[in-house]
Amino acid sequence: MSYNPSYCWILGLALGLFFTERHRNPQRVPKTITQLYSYYIYNIVKNHSREIENPRDVFLNVGQMVFTGVSKKKIVFTDGDLIKYNLQPSQFLSGFLMELLEREDCGRSVVYTFPHLTIQEFVAALAQFKTPDRRYILKLLTEAHSTTDGRFEVFLRFVAGLSSSGSVRGLEEFLGPFPHQTTCRVVDWVKEEIKRQIGNIGSKAGKRSLLNTLHYLFESQNRGLTQATLGSVETLSFCGLRLTPIDCAVLFHVIGLCDTMKRLDLRGCFIHCEGLQRLGPALHNCRELGLENNDLGDSGLKLVSAAMRDPECNIQRLGLGVNRLTDSGAEDLASALSTNRSLTELDLSGNKLGDSGVKLVSATLMEPGCKIQTLRLGDVGLTDSGAEDIVSALSTKRSLTGLGLGSNSLTN
Image (tube, rainbow, N blue to C red; front, side, top):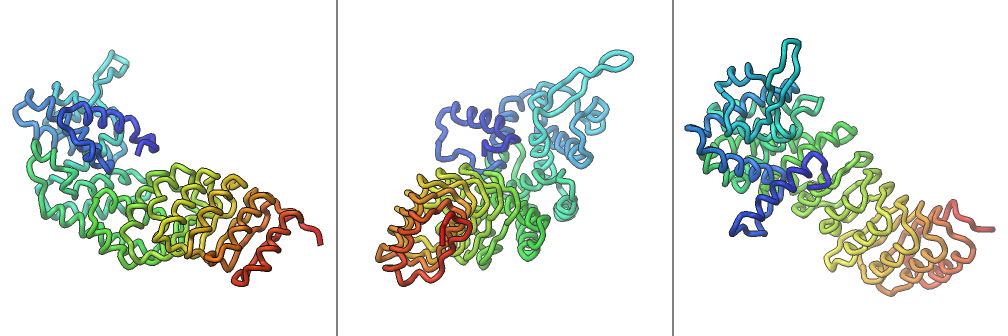
């Protein structure tokens, strides 16, 4: 999670609090952003709640105030805002809000803001989840999701995450039980939203919307919900959409629970090695894996090769074109291909493998267990010298029926 600058400083602070408390189990380190922020808020309430008579009501009033702020893109609050929501400055309140001096024509005034916008969004989500009107939450979710300027994006992830009992267990100590009906309504809304989005990925906007919805699944940590909504999905395509390492972690969660996944298209998603590390453990589940036009490099290829070595690897078609791969990375790939028994189509075009890299791949083609039928090596820096290795492989490998060698330095 620390790869997202919006969360990294909270991550350090919350985990610091987590591990400095006695008797904490390291296996319960937060898995989601919601769990992370829940622990952060829990510590604030726990350490300051003795100073006021009813911390629950005060906290929820703060949440109502800042939800209005999220709705109106407002991050600075005045004494007038506090009065409107029956709040007054206190040490408890200072655990959430920072006091800042603001210059005015006639002097100075105090205004209030959160240390980070995401804290405001989390507190707002908590307050909305705890609203007494159970019917209100569906209207809220629908309206928030329909906005196109992204103001509710993180807020909605938090709402979905609060449907997980594991994420709110500590907070219930101070805020009381989280309404079961609200939880059910949130889960049902996520389920219907994913079913609606899964067939709407023809455009970049549709892909982004689906990805945001998958974040709700991830935050909920609801295995049954994931399998109910994506259990029969055979193709996921985010081609051309920039994916962060956190996006990749979300996809790993999804793919790992989709037994029917056949095709994962991540071409041109600006994935670096860090993102692939999040995806790596689930890659072997896909039959067709498109990773062309990313920025994996040889270090990323090591992760792909590890997936190829998995005894349960199902990958049949693998696209690795234009990924800054070199002959060094080809050595890892060749080693993996020598043991893999599923791959039938491999695209390495647009990488600087050179004759030495092609030699390694060619040697693998001659392995008795190698099943590759189609190999694309266009624009890989191949010369006549390296072509000899390809010719040698072709003479012994009858199963290789498709070979692409365009845009190389070959003579007639």
